[in-house]
Length: 485
Length: 93
Image 1 (cartoon, each protein chain N blue to C red):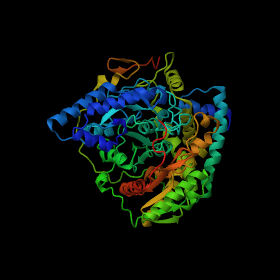
Image 2 (cartoon, rainbow over the protein chains, first blue to last red):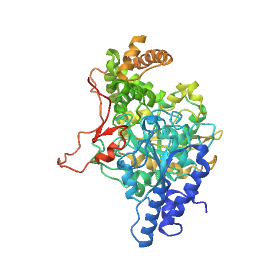
Image 3 (spheres, rainbow over the protein chains, first blue to last red):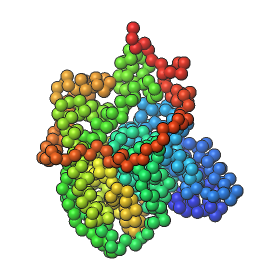
């Protein structure tokens, strides 16, 4: 038995039945990481010692006949913008190269409480601010399906690690598609929860009104299991809401007869790779076969989502990045005469190109007369975009679209053609702007490269998208599921 | 977008730019403003801005003193510290 080929659900079961120990599971995955990660570069930090200790505690519980947590013995990867107590957390930046957080993020606490085994911190675009994982200070991650291509981003380390069986589950974060786009590019399942379902306490902020913590797995059930563990309000995060808790995993069922599914005409008419479009239309037909009702709808403000998102995100980035000045924590320049010089040199040397561009753009928007006008307007258009969705969700349970308009692009290509990279999030950003939940689920392969289907749901109606994805996955047998490494 | 305007923004950001970067940003700002101008097509005069999606239903809690992070632990991340404070060079003469 190759333990790394097991699903999270199977690992948990086998540990409970004493067919395998948590220590064996952990070692098998650490061996896998040692074997392939030098080349793949999905991890920035591997926490071998802590993982082995945690595994031993689980095995002790099994031995004592104690109740096991929901994630007992399951290896988990954590995106390196989520703080972990006493474990270096870099956000993929030189600025935080030596940052050792003094506390655990709420989502990390919850994983530990449920006996999950954290194997390490995964690579990402610097501060989660791009779409290919190439802007990481720690070098790019490769796509396990085709190592000449990017894994997507910003959560590319997490999705590559899950795809390559280095871990069974992983955490990511999603500000404008950072969970869904890389899940699609790596052919796995990625969930972006509704804004406010999961605590952001301990998530290093990129954009406060858009960021969410999300989950990855190689199938819908596994990604759902991790969501079940991390969801819920938190005294430390006022934006994490008290919502009625649904046990997602127990509510999953493959019967979706009568489900009302919307296919937005505006999305399907946007420029995209014809192979992607074809797969998504096939997926829509498959839903009909399963007894769902699929109809075309209109989201009149869809074309304004990008400008709206851009104005909000860069403005919030410029504000979130203001705290890095070489004083309290983070990189400090070696050579300075004045306090001002300390700030300028520390920031100029410690931050990368991509994030500097966002800081500059955001500062310009927030400080210029014209910029401020559009900043204010963006929040009004945001209300209109949300109204579009509210109207659709009065009648429909979920909305279908491609996850990305394109297939994974080659490493280095985004420098030559940044428009393609930024455009890859076009179907993802509306869910962030309106606070909706969404999932990316594999829907086939085109010329050996994975295509993702995005299913969006109303705020806090995660169960609808999970059910739809689960039913879809159960029906679709994917050829090429085990392609790549 | 002028060179002076770019340098002014860089000053606010506490970033120092190379000549190459100054040129990139001059082009970028112009491009950005062109892109966002498409929002002009929409009349939003009577639309309330949506800044945050939720906060309003948040229950209040008692204001009780709780243990916070350990000072020594936190200061371990400071590039320089002294007497339990962050240390920088003299700010005023």
